[in-house]
Length: 182
Image (tube, rainbow, N blue to C red):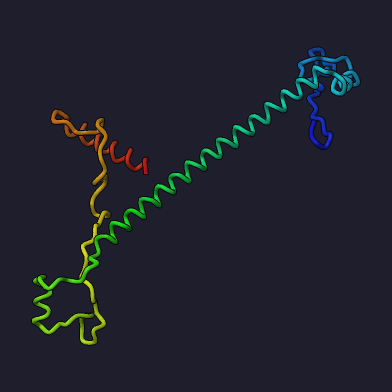
């Protein structure tokens, strides 16, 4: 029974083996001689009301289960997104750490050569609008190759007795698992 008084019907009119009409309640799995008896059963039977409540609880549990599964899926997607963001922040921190913060010291050979040629500091070029900091070394992970820097699981380690084909399969499987973890 819904909040608006609606009662779902489990009544069915079926054709019997001899072609006659058979009135049945599919919820209670009972047969009735007429449509009137079936409607009385739906309105007054305690068995029907109990079976109806059980079925409604089953439907609610199925809905709750599907909502939990959807929420779990969304949580996993959110967790993967946060992991990617954390990796990106970590990469950016590494990049920022590689850029030299201090200007060149007086004992630096390149600095001494530039001062001998008349450079007193500031930007390079005729107008002084060029670079005024050192070029920093940058980590280029994009050219490192697949799986570089990722620790390999024991099961994927290539052993001295492995053939070329087995070693290639182990390496490919390790790269695939690493890409699925990301």
